[in-house]
Length: 273
Ligand SMILES: [Zn+2]
Ligand SMILES: [Zn+2]
Image (cartoon, rainbow, N blue to C red; front, side, top):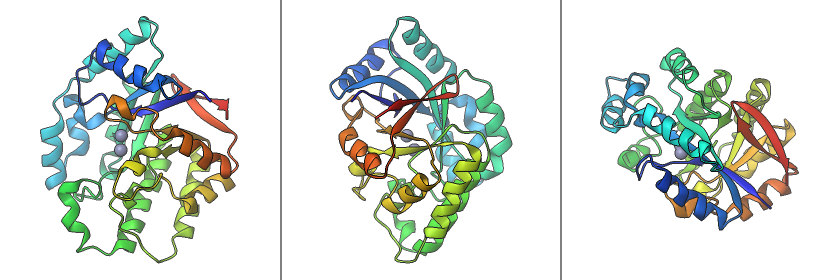
């Protein structure tokens, strides 16, 4: 089976062909024939205004926005010109109050695909270890509900081609016994209406929760609504490209999926599994 991995971050190295080749070489060992780079949009100084807040979210992003998006795009386009099997993507945080600004920003660049993600509930960076202690003072069920509400708004915004790590809210292993099936059904329904692709991410296997994103309870609804899927690693280093894709493949197959997606110039295509 040949794979494509479209959720890969270059941020621990420079925007150079050499660094990109390292990801391709490691991917090739795991049958990954194409790598899509999806740098965090918040790393770019040009995008600083998209995450603004008076609280800690704004401060955190001010520190992180050190890179130049033009350099990133040029590097990936140069790799394409040299015939390397790469795609130009981006991972963009959805912040409800900045929806219009995010939409406009994303439309200005020649991405092959745009990944939408939710990493913040207001000023609570719930998947960031720096905020871990805030979990103990929160109602887990209500936090899940809030997260999926924001995620559903991200789906409906029409900004994104792919929704990343759908239940990343479970990253530290905080879980609720309460029934969330109606919440999950609503997410899948919104994805169907927005004609958007769901990411099956192996990153969760490397996190405290130790599970693929999304959980089986969500997969059932994705399948029911016929949502297109893509298997991604969310690699931040070359060794993680294509990691655990064999497990993810079995996972999607057992829910009855028969195709995976790939993208070019924001158009979706399929390949058989
Ligand atoms: Zn993410
Ligand atoms: Zn990511």
